[in-house]
Image 1 (tube, rainbow, N blue to C red):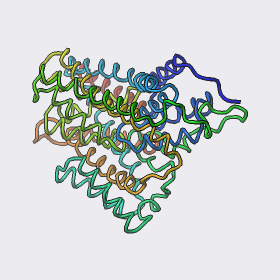
Image 2 (image 1 turned 180 degrees about the horizontal axis):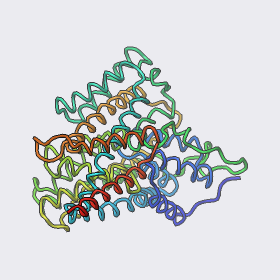
Image 3 (image 1 turned 180 degrees about the vertical axis):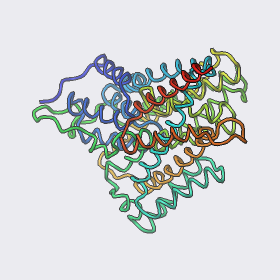
Image 4 (image 1 turned 30 degrees about the horizontal axis):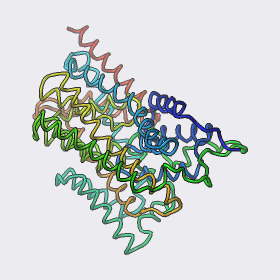
Length: 467
């Protein structure tokens, strides 16, 4: 017996609920989607769910939001996809814009300064743990280790742009698999048809979650007797089939959604204005964000901190701490970058909020276009193999990029103040404690962030009592 047809209103309520409670990173979000849509509601079968997940994990961008967009599109067409992805993303955007505004206005107050002083070592520990977990799962052979080391040297030592490193890693993986088939895929324990090939991408974003394959994080299969609404043998719905006219209209709408705001920003702010520059830069970020948020943050920091000076490395760490406390994808931290960049450029909260919205628009718009344009092709390609070699090489390069991010953050966290300032021994102690809690006690990110905030409050209180 097939599952009952789901209405757009019912699906919309679910997507909004998901956006409000989607803590735990992509592994938790994907597991929640699987539990709700495959096991309980039976809106989609296991095989079709994993096929959609495989496609989303091969794309740049946050795979959990892309997966929700894909499933919403499969259920209700373009409108359903936009509603699913939009409602999934909206709560985290609004919350982080609020927190970023508070930070911009009052971040220099002693109370907030004390809290963020303690948060910085905790965030550095989270990044170190991300690198460790990702490396342990990804670097299964000597070639992966070499690729990771090359990425670290290229990014941190030579200052090469991350898109170039990703392209070189993919090319090296393709060449290696052509010359010696299985050198990357077999070493990593995957077959080209495996649904687990991109599991490291989940580990890169929120390492506190047990990172296994999508199948491992999924609950047990449901009781027999109720077929999925979109089952293994269910025909592809008409809106999900390849239609050249619909594809052309989607590409046109997507092009206008990029071009018209960019033209408007250029007219208002100038081609080299802060808002226009952010739009161009974060459009590139959206196209190179393979491997999760921790993988793309070095590229964001390279541009926002070192090239454009929108915020400092220490403020970038603060933004990452705020991003860890909100639902939704960790890459939403780019909204903080936009708000701080706009605030420093104009000193106006309204301008800063516009900058944050510009960054969100140009960062996440490509994720929707990838699904709406590529979805029909994916539905038509069920059962085909994937390019596992290049993806394994990209996964290895991501390890080096995350290590580069840890080195970038270590300076302002452990050696704050002037260039000649000494080592902050209290920050070192907090870093060691945070690493101990993460690795030995297996604390999650939210308890660690909360505990660090309490330590910062206690420090402010002691300073106040002593003055």
